[in-house]
Length: 140
Image: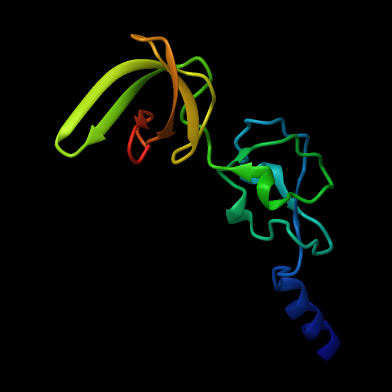
């Protein structure tokens, strides 16, 4: 009886020292759901260990079932897609200038992307904001 109780206690605990894997082939730019994530039977250094680290995040590379998910393999979902029209915002002091642009890269909030100012056809870099606009200039 003691053996059964000990077995049930061990079996009911979530494995803390295991790495995450995918249960199916996941292509880049796909947002991971709970049905996509599984566990390996071992811990591999430099990999995700909690489903919270993967669910809702976007695959940055092809993820294969049975292989551990590395820390850099997933990230926040992109807000800006390549060739998407975007609003460019330049702020300094009390001055704010906005114009239209086109994203040359895809990126998530807080990431640097290249954009083209449609008025001048100049390529510049900026930071994706949570609303999908691009902050350029100081602080961008």
